[in-house]
Amino acid sequence: MNINLTFLGQMVSFAILVWFTTKFIWPQLNHAIEERQKKVAEGLAAAERARAELKDADAKVAVEIKQARQQATEIIDKAQQQANQIVDKARADAVAEAVRLKAAAADDIVSMQQRAREELRGWVGRLAVQGAEKIVQREIDVSAHKAMLDQLAAEI
Image 1 (tube, helix red, strand yellow):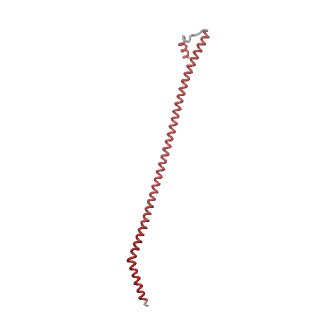
Image 2 (cartoon, one colour; image 1 turned 135 degrees about the vertical axis):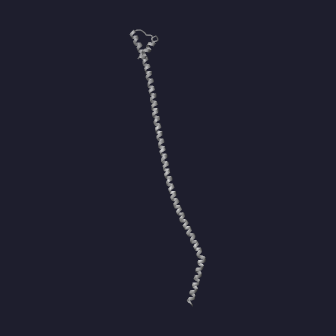
Image 3 (cartoon, one colour; image 1 turned 60 degrees about the vertical axis):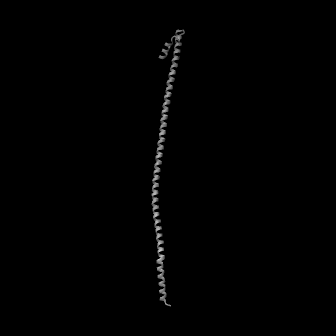
């Protein structure tokens, strides 16, 4: 038993194994490792892109929310202005209606005063005739003295 020959045989076997591994197995392992590295790198790049897109989307959402709030504020302001205009118009209409009713009431009062004066003139005329009858102690003809009685009523 020669240890050197066994050792030499093991060295040759090991060299053949190393050559076979580097020639046939190692390239496939390297290729698989490189593909895996590419996939990992692509995944990391995709994650970075997704993170950047998420930041952009968040910024866009913030801008949209801000614009929506501004639009809501504008709509509320416009609604408030319209409500104020409606209240002001209703107030102006009520004032105009009150003025119209006051004018109508004043016209009614003037016409009632006129009728009361006419009625009073008629009564005064009749009283004057009755008073004159008592003074003169005779009947005065109303139709004959109508012009004079109308003038007397107008002066009163």
